[in-house]
Amino acid sequence: MKNLMIIAGTLLIVFLTGVSCNKDTEDDSIPDPTDTTSTTPIKILRNNLSYPWEILWGHDDHIWMTERAGKISKLNPSDGSKIFSTTIDEVEPRGEGGLLGMAQDPDFLNNGFLYVVYNYIKSGNYTEKVVRLKFSNDALSDPFTLIDDIPASNIHNGSRIWASDDGKLFISTGDAANSANAQDANSRSGKILRINKDGSIPSDNPISGNPLWSFGHRNPQGMVMVNNVLYTSEHGPSVEDEVNIIQKGKNYGWPQVNGPCNGSETSFCSANSVVEPIWSTGGSTFALSGMDYYNHDRIPEWKNSLLVASLKNTTLYVLHLNSQRTAVNSSDEYFNGQFGRLRDICVSPTGTVYICTGNGANDALVAITARP
Image (tube, rainbow, N blue to C red; front, side):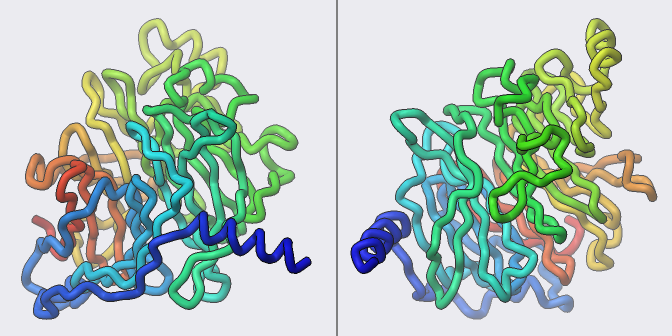
């Protein structure tokens, strides 16, 4: 037993390194973006980030962030200072791959569970998996693999995670540069996957023993759930980035269909009951990435909207939903080119919007407290 404990401890040390609990020595006079009386609408809270991928508002009222090379950080939302960080050495960043999405368990304040998805080398193959970690006493420990053997590539890896209140995890996966995988129910790529938070397969999934929840996806990089409705944003090939409402067991068309069903796509759509997007980019691509839902009085013009970041178009898209949240009535655009490529978004309980960039050099965390 002692030998097993020693081996487990050694593996944990190898897995998680670089833990730091020291706060940055940054200017404490920076205005607090969570202060509802703030009159400065846009603030750069932090620079010198390297490919941040996920930012989320934690149940502990801090911003949690992943960076693609393997770093997980906990940040002070008032000034962007780093409270905690650690690096997962197992992460293998290649091209678009590396440490990607992250979610906190709804009961995070009691169980400390974080869920991360990342790419690594398994038996010589580039692979993706979802791992549960436990945060306690300013440290991450107890790595537990929930789902593995998701095909990975230098491109099209997805991947976002959503932890729902009913104990389920939704994971978006890209087609890993093999478009045929998206229509293959036996492949875990090009899908929205659904598992229990212990890694088991829910009994009410569309296919018994299969994590597939929906299929026919190319590269979904944004995900948010609003009143039990799951929305995703997805990269198109050269046209038709999409925003979708995800339905159980449904086909979203890729690679036979891009965007809404039209022209030669209609026969495939009819034969396979393809679900069409609620919004798409038409004849070009924007490289849509992270998304969140906004419904706060702080920026009343954005209420009942999906906020969607874009990489290629360097723009924040505000998609105004109808009252049923089933369609996009109109859209607005902000920050075109101001900060470069926009990777992800999160919203605080006070209505402050946070954006991280994805330029790869001197990336930033930006706070928005009023409509620009």
